[in-house]
Image 1 (cartoon, one colour):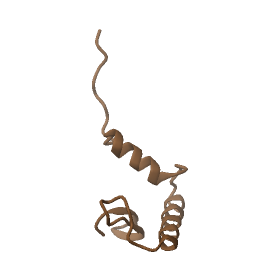
Image 2 (cartoon, rainbow, N blue to C red):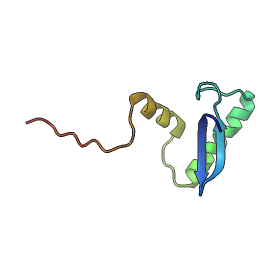
Image 3 (tube, rainbow, N blue to C red):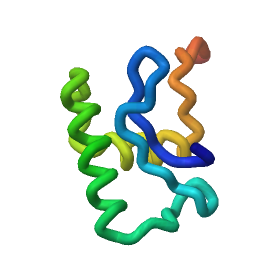
Image 4 (cartoon, helix red, strand yellow):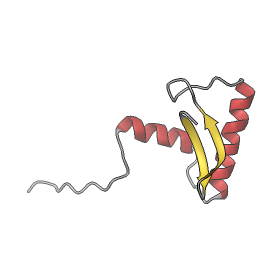
Length: 77
């Protein structure tokens, strides 16, 4: 897959949502995109995911530059 969102387990793509245009937009029919998105959400929830909208959350963290790494900076003083 060249861009997009995927839920995987043991190296297998279980629920792909291909986003081929700039890794933001799909070339698929809108109904297919909705179906793929629902499959991503269902697979995510089935594996214990608790975010209401994981795709939006990932987009926000990426835009904010959040890498998930622990911030070890200390407050001055």
